[in-house]
Length: 517
Picture 1 (cartoon, helix red, strand yellow):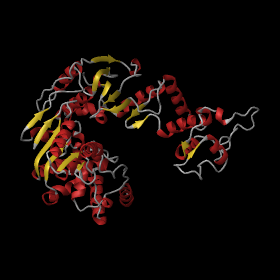
Picture 2 (picture 1 turned 135 degrees about the vertical axis):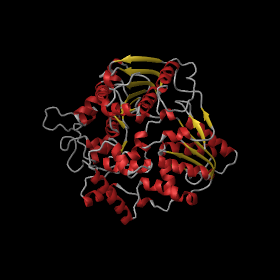
Picture 3 (picture 1 turned 90 degrees about the horizontal axis):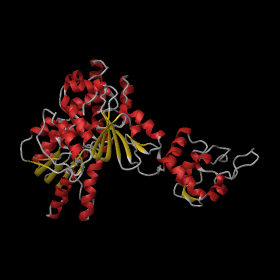
Picture 4 (picture 1 turned 30 degrees about the vertical axis):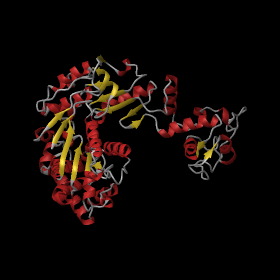
C-alpha cells in the first residue's frame, strides 16, 4: 500500500485524479479501477472528471467510483431495502420502551462523523464501539453518557435481535460483513485509490487491507496532521505506521508564507506524526491579524470562512451577520431560504411584466394572506402545475390574485404597485428586515454566499480567501486537550490552514479556556 501525504493545499485529491487519468490513457479498463471516498461528493467528483475526459458512462464504466459503504453494500448480498431506516429505529424504540432519538440514519453516503455520531447517544455509542472494534463496555467507560450500563446493553441486545428477526442491516453491518467475505466477494482491481485515509477507523482499515490484497496497486492519500475525527473512531496511528513506500506532496497552492509559519508552529506541537515538509504558496505573503470581534471586519468582498471549535460559539456570529445584511451559509444552510428568495425575486419579475413558473407562484402565494391578497379557494393554486408559466395578468384573471386587494380603504392600492414586502404581507418580519438589510448593503440575496459559518470539523477540505478563527475551547474540548492534546493541535492546524490570504484570530473570551495561537 503506497501512501501519498498531502499537507494543506498541496492537492492530494487532484494527484489521485491525475493518476486515474494516466491509467485510463494507458488503457487500463475503467471497470478495473476503484476510487473510494468517504463522501458521495468526493466520489462523484472523480467519476464526473474521468467520464467527461474519456467519454465514459459514469454508471456503467465507473461503477467502482463510490463510497466505502456503497462498495460494501454492492459487494454483498444485502439489498438497499434491507438497510435500517428511521421508521425501523422508531419501531424498535416503541417496542422496547426506550426512547431513541434517531434521524439521518438511512444514508450510507454520509461523512464519517455522521455515520458514527448519530443523534441518539446510545446508538452512537454502540456503533462507535463496533467501528473501533473494542468491547462495548470499554467504549462505555471512555464515553460521557448519562444512560446506565444496563440500558445500553439492553438496547444493544434488542437491536441485534430486531435486525436478525427482520433480516435488516445497518451501516456498520455492511462494513463488518466485508472482511468476513471480502476475499470472495471483492472484485480484483488493477488500481485502487483511497482518499482521506487518515480518517479510517479500525474496521475500515480491515476493508482497506483486503482491497490492497485484491489490487495490483493501491494508493491511499491523506494527512495525519489533519486527522481530526479520532472521536468518531478514526485510527490515525494505523495510517502513520503503515509499511511500504510513500510520497509527500511538497508545494502548497493555498497557504501563504505568514500563515504557513504559524501553521508549522502549531503542527510541531503534535507528539505523534509523520514528519514532512512542504512549501508555502509561491509569491503570497498573507497576513495575520488579531481581533476582538467580527464587527471589526468588513466582509463585503472576497470569500470568508468563520470557524470555531464548537457550534454554539457561532450563534452570536450568525446574529451579527444577519443584522449587518450579509448573506451566508450557516453550517450547511443558507441564511435565507431558497423559498423566500424565489418568492421575492419572482414577485419583482411579475411586476416587470415577466412570467414565472407555477412552482414560484405557489411560493409567492404562501406568503400572502387570504381575503386581502388572494381570493378564497386559490391559496394553493389548485389548477396550476409547477411547470406552467404565468404572468401577473393571468394570476389575476384565473388564479385568485386580487388586483386591488386593500378593500375597505379609501384609496386601494393596485397590486402592480406593490413591492415585494407589501405584497407578501405574511412574510415573517425577521426575514423581511433581513432582506431589506441585505438590499441596503447591495448583497445579492439570491446569489451564492461568499461567507460560510462552520465548525472547524465541518470546514475540513474547504478554503477561503479570508478565515476568521475563534480560539475558545468548549468545556469538553478543554477536558479532551488534557487527555490527548494532539487532537486539539490538529483541529487548530486545520483551522489555520484554510486561509488563502488573510487570517483573523479572534481573542478568546476566557484566556484560561482557549487555544494558544
